Length: 120
Image 1 (tube, rainbow, N blue to C red):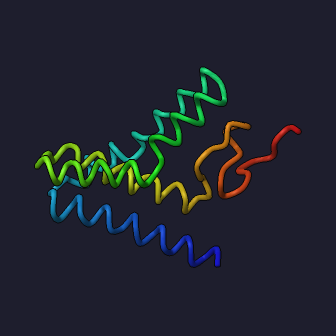
Image 2 (image 1 turned 30 degrees about the vertical axis):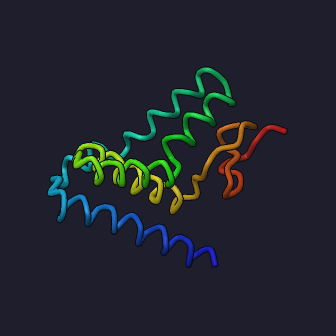
């Protein structure tokens, strides 16, 4: 089952890249620069686990990304569509590597399990 879920996330990442490249005509090098952009949200952890989890989850939630994509479509705003697609693809990439939405307990505690050994 784990392999099936990773394959599903890989397909979503590929779909996001496809839409960016072929429909919105975003050059590959631009996507490469933007790909790690959502990780800026980890700076929230400087204010503690609660703020960090909240900011990280805001930038890594697929519903937020989809809302941005659809808002961009409705408003005919390409930059909003691009931002949503980058967030969506980035989130899928993170899920492939086992990084999920964060719990307030700490960065390593996600909805997919723990990502590293934690001090208990």
